[in-house]
Image 1 (cartoon, rainbow, N blue to C red):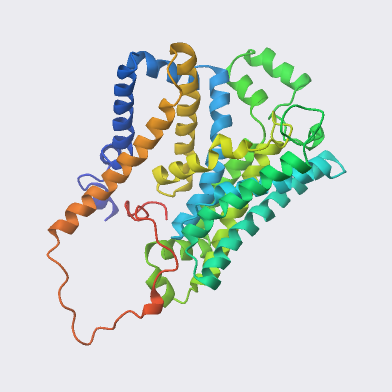
Image 2 (cartoon, rainbow, N blue to C red):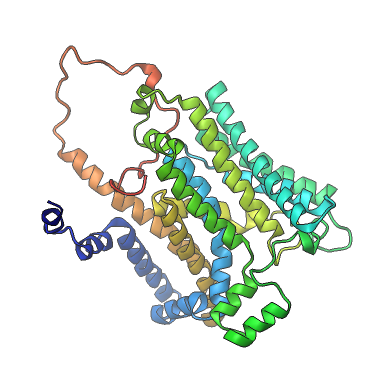
Amino acid sequence: MTQAVNDRPGSGVLPRIGRWLAGPIPVSVVLALVVGAVFMLVAGVDPISGYRAMVSGSFGTGMGIANTLGRAIPIIGIGIGIALAFRAGIINLGTEGQAVLGALAGGFVAVYMPGPGPLVALCAMVTGVVAGAAWGLLAALLQNSLGVPILLATLLLNYPARYFSSWLIRFQLKDPSTDLVASKQIDPGAQLTALVPAGPTAEAVRRTFGPMSPITMVLTQVNWSLVIVAVLVIGAIFVNRRTRYGFEAGLAGQNPEFTRYGGVKPGPLVLRTMALSGGIAGLIGVLIVIGAPNTRMIEGHIVQTNYAWTALLVTLLALYRPLGVAIAGLFFGAIIVGSEAMGRDLGLSPQIAAVIQALVIILLAYRVALPRFRKKRQDPGPVDPPTSAPTVPAAAAPSAVAPTTATTEPGGER
């Protein structure tokens, strides 16, 4: 029986790969690169040279690979927090504020808490998680208690978090010994060092693999945030596939009404989801502050790097799947680093990276929505139900608007 199923046309590995390559994600990426090439032509740059410089700058050298990983780590981490919320049908647009407050609270602990460095770093991370989770819970409570849509609550709560952090660092925590608008330096013992910190071991790595090899550059330039984010990705996959919460959250994202009938209360689910999503964002905020080579809390750093909004694009591209978030985050990190290299080599504005990122998401949304639109146009309309059919009560309305792309690829990781 199994052999008969495997022998069916289109059930092999190659046909599946072919169907994926013809799907919305690869096609959207290719079309975005084509449109990006048109922009390069308008700017007077050969697109082949431009993309060659982009690939070389992001993956062609050891330093490029290390820089790409460094850019991708916070994007992937925050993207995991967004993906967990979106998968449950909860649109969390407040990860910027959650990351900012997590960085502020955790950074304060890292700067001022006495004690052994590893203990200080651990306490800073825990504090950042608590701060981010608390800010996420505030948005959930506003929806559950006052009926404020969580989309609006999370979006608007970014602003008080951003401005409070800016005021505190600028006027209360600023180090007068530096021209930067930043706090005092974090004790080196409380920092997340490179995977192989400077010292005899790092010198041995350089002698073994060469000073500029990819292995050497990754081990000596990328900090331990890489391992923490990798654990987050694996943990998110486990939660989605192997836990009751993951099952309930995935079901809520696809069919909130059915979830209610199954006995799952939407209010507590929203609270748990926002605490988890906000806590992850807060943790990433701390990792940005205490991860080498950063040594201070810098005013506006997390906002200016635009990590949270890039992570939102990554989550949409990955369709909320943790492994997809990791791959898409690496792709976007490569675009950012490669665009900077392209700007140095060819004099082209690195803003081309933002253009390509935006085009990928716009084209993906179009490719996903077009089949649904056609199906809706061809649907003759619902048939009148029998008079005995039950009606859905008004109280069964979903607690949050489920993202439209959550069910675009049935059979995937939910």
